[in-house]
Image 1 (cartoon, rainbow, N blue to C red):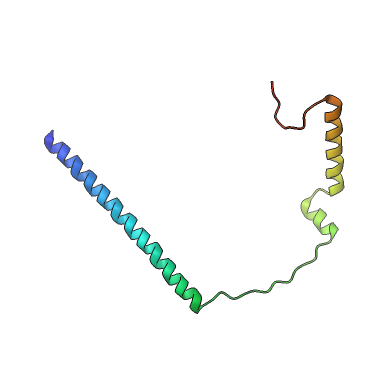
Image 2 (cartoon, rainbow, N blue to C red):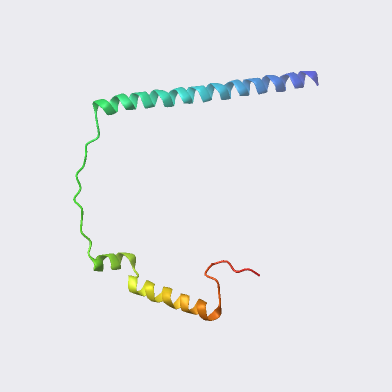
Length: 96
């Protein structure tokens, strides 16, 4: 039984040492990559792309959204009138 306990301690120690080694290796690799990328970004900066702003008219916006603002206003008005008539609170949660 003593031999088995010694094996478990040795296995735990090796596992802990391996995890520490991997953690340190990955940390150093991240630091190294960031340093290299910063140096390369100074040497080779990204190109700035000029984009033209596009004008959108009201009809295009209605087709993209799918629901016109007039319909949304009508639904909102109908819901608020219904709640006033039936004395319901404006919250979505019903309490029992």
